[in-house]
Length: 180
Image: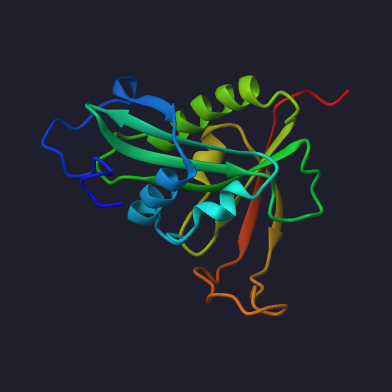
């Protein structure tokens, strides 16, 4: 997709508040393209890596017919998680033109929609790259830090592209339902 097709360089106003944004579902292909434009560490995610999961859902924020952020969710990459009840935030990318607090605001909107569309999902997870992020958005959105993992290359078992990030990760979790 071209930058014009993505609605990135249209003339127009920039939002000054998250109240001006609309969070909408988008296709995996569009979400991948928007992520490639804005993500700080992991710009590459092919739409097939989203679509081949049991569950997947993608969102973007819009204002004045332009996109300003994207969130990509799918069943967890780590197969130790129950793919029927856990959903992973694979990417969250925010345009530099987005208003302050877009990430936390978008997390809230996406969670509400996930609860509606995927009622079997009871827990959300995400991984923070410790080399460049502090976890501020997760703290602000009441997520819990649950684990820290050291970097491990992905190319041990088969030929893969080089790692996009070699930083340690912190896993954050958010419970959608209370434990019974």
